[in-house]
Length: 123
Image 1: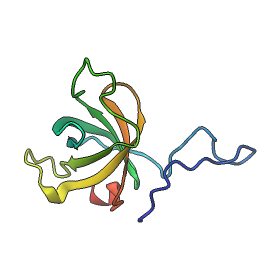
Image 2 (image 1 turned 60 degrees about the horizontal axis):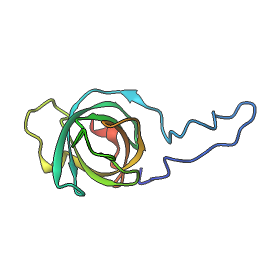
Image 3 (image 1 turned 180 degrees about the vertical axis):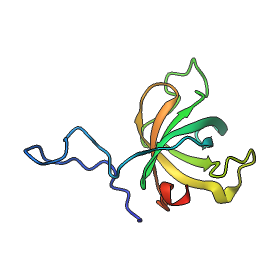
Image 4 (image 1 turned 90 degrees about the vertical axis):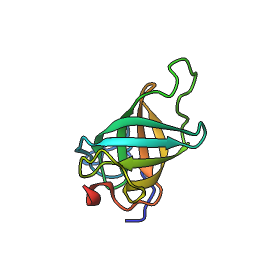
């Protein structure tokens, strides 16, 4: 699993994947509570997963500061804690290092796992 090349682009042509689709693995709907630690601000943000793949997650998070110009920065490192069993308490064992690969508004971010243990394997 240890791959990080989730932003591969494919050539265009017949019978080839859509070149605008940057997914490195198929996504599956998965809604779980998350906490995200943002080292740049020193804050934890509450949110939820929208979907997951073997390489990462699409997350919906409370924006750290609605007035901020850039609540998230592309390629920013984050620590993502996922409530796999719907527990209220999250443990360090439930966390993974990740980095932001796409920002879809102030609170929606796509992240790829740095340690790539497999988001779906844990689900």
